Image 1 (spheres, rainbow, N blue to C red):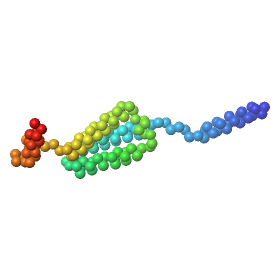
Image 2 (image 1 turned 45 degrees about the vertical axis):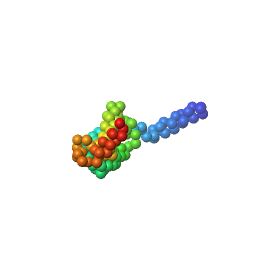
Image 3 (image 1 turned 90 degrees about the vertical axis):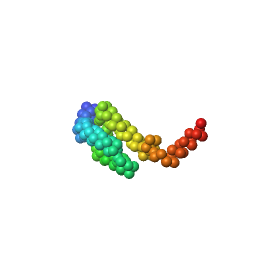
Image 4 (image 1 turned 60 degrees about the vertical axis):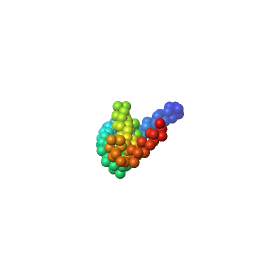
Length: 139
């Protein structure tokens, strides 16, 4: 008799405790989709701005601004929202970021190592004399 009362009491307590616990939140991917769209638009806009930056100061400003805005977007959503993105969404973000990084790298190389075509250098320029003397010593 005592066992059955104890079992009934234990069952009632476990049901009561289970009823008081919070329901698990259903994973809603609408926030992830919204975050995805915002990241894609931001990355496309800043890639375009980076391509059109006329000088190194504008280039640096665009890069800094992009990083700050990307952080704001990412941190404006609950933790692990990015885990709800689909594989296709992740691939798209990856491709857009890869394009941004390649444009950024290309602009860095263009700023640090500008290329002058030999046709655009005036005839009496010392660069042509230096290039000619280097070729003569190498032969």
